[in-house]
Length: 248
Image (cartoon, rainbow, N blue to C red; front, side, top):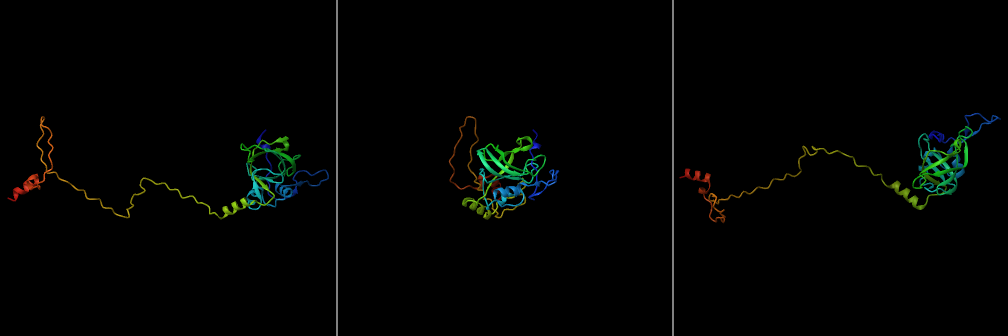
């Protein structure tokens, strides 16, 4: 079956309106109900606005979680053509993977949108069994739809617990961390930058050796002489001998 058949209609929170299709035999317009007012009426959760805003609006006002309970509202995240999200009330929990839902404007009934469906099946198809993805009964095919719809979680008709309230307060008061700006440092990063402190190079000590060694011969052994204790004179250095000859 094609994915396109499993596609609820996207509508804003407008409540009841007249159906655009043909009326009944007595020309009485059929009600056209959106998912939001119906979920609000059957769950008692007083949140208004498009379905995609319910999860964030519930923060700090209603308890939230990721396990279904009767009376809770399943909050669907926008996905594909369902740009406004969806909300549906849980009427019964069958098992860890299956619940029954009460919702409106999901399946077209007799070719008409905006109809109510009570106690229709929804199955958790997430790998971790955390109800993050579900498949929902779709009337035109008489079975579960083929699309795995992303779910934010469940909104419960009760105040949030102390732990959840503290988490909300902490997240509201905590400043958001800003990412440090990234910069690319090239090879010429330090070009033209002068150091704040000028360090002079240490003077190099030059030690002159005034020892004279006789020329080595093939049979001569290397001579190791002890350092001389006498003071060097001008005659010990070639340049010194020239200077000494001119001063005579």
